[in-house]
Length: 149
Length: 149
DNA sequence: TTCATATATTTGTCACACTAATTATTTGTA
DNA sequence: TACAAATAATTAGTGTGACAAATATATGAA
Image 1 (cartoon, rainbow over the protein chains, first blue to last red):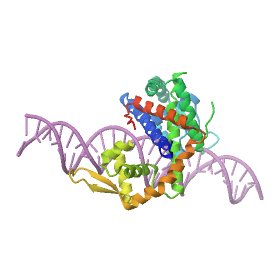
Image 2: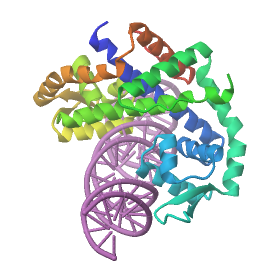
Image 3: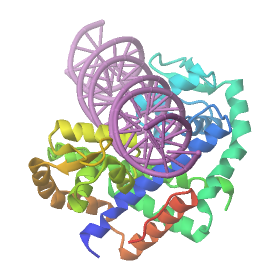
Image 4: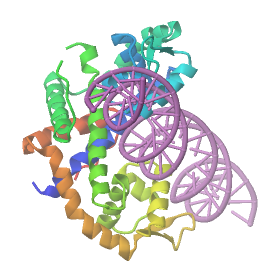
C-alpha cells in the first residue's frame, strides 16, 4: 500500500467523527434536549462520578480548560450545573448538578443511548473491539494517555 | 455488552480524531507550513483534481459551504488560491491554485505524508482495512454517502 | 517569613462546524 | 416573456477546539 492511500485514515476519521457528532446533534435538536452533544458529555460525567473540580472534569472528558470553562458557563446559565466554592482552596470550584440537572440526565440518558445505537447497525461486538483497539493505538501513538478500565 | 459500554465509541472516536488533528497541526506549526490542516486538505485536492467550483470542492472534502468559504478566504489572503469568475455562470467561481500555491503543495506533500505515518505505528495493513470498513459503515449508517474508488 | 514556582480558572484570539437567512444569478415552466 | 423555483456563494450567530497569556491563590524551599 502506498503512503498516499494510507494517509487517508485522517480524512476518514475526521469525516466520520463529524458525522457522528452532527447526527447526534440533529437528534438532540429534534427532541428539544436543550443541550449540545458536548454539554451532554459533561452532565453525564458529573452524574456518574459526582461533584468534582473543573480540572478533574477536564481530564475525565479530555477537553482543555478554556473549553470546559465555556461549557460550564453555558450549563450554569441553563441552571443544570452550579459552581460551588471549594472550602479549602479558593482557586477552585466543585461542580454540582442542580436538581434540574439531575432530572435532565435522567430524562435524556435512555434517549441518547438509542441515538448512539444507530451508528452501530451492521456491525458487531467484535468490530467494536477492533475499532476500540485501533483508535486507542492511534491515540497513544500520538502521545495520548489511555486509562485502562 | 451493555448499551452503555457500547455508546463509548462516540467518545473514543471524537477523542482520537481531535488528537490526530492536533498532532498534525503542531507539526505543521513547528515546520512553519503556514497553513492549517484543513487548509492543506483544500490545497491538496485542488492540486490533485484541478480547478473547480466551491460547491464541487465542498462535496469532495465533505465540508459545508460556509466553512469552505472561510477557508478559501484565508487561502486567498495568503495568495495560494485565486477565485476566478466562471465564464458562463456569474454566480460561481473556479478555484485555481496560484504559482505560490503549487509550490506550497509540492514542498509540503512529502513532509505531511511523514507526519501522517506516525499514527500508524504498531498497526498493519489489515488493521487499516478494518478501520476503513468500520468508519465507512458508521458513516453510511448515519446517512453519509461513501464514494467507491 | 518570603519569594519563586506551581496550580485552578479565566480571557482573548483564531480557526472550524452547523444552522438559518440573504444575495445574486440561472433555470424551468406557464 | 415572466415569474417561481433552484443553485452558488456569502453572512450572521452560536458552539467548540487549540493555544497563549493573565489572574488569583496555594505551596515549598531558602
